[in-house]
Image (cartoon, rainbow, N blue to C red):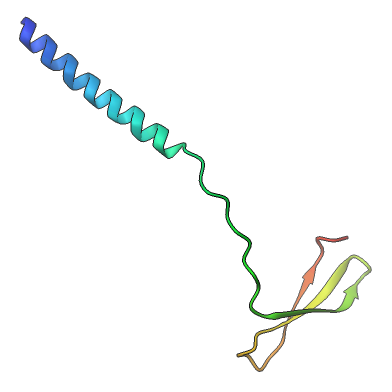
Length: 75
C-alpha cells in the first residue's frame, strides 16, 4: 500500500469507529424517570377473595358498567 492509501484507510476507519462509539454511548444514556399517571376512573375495594386478594371495582365516568379485578399485591 502506498502511504496515501494507508492514511486514507486509517482516516476512514477512525471516522467509522468514532461514529459507532458515539452512537453506542448515546444509546446507553439514562432516560428520564417516568412520572406517575393519575388514574382517570374510580377504584373501590368491595370484597376480599380467600383473605389474600382484594376485589376491586372500577368504573369510568363515561362507562355505564363496572369492571372487577383482583389486587393481590398488598397481601
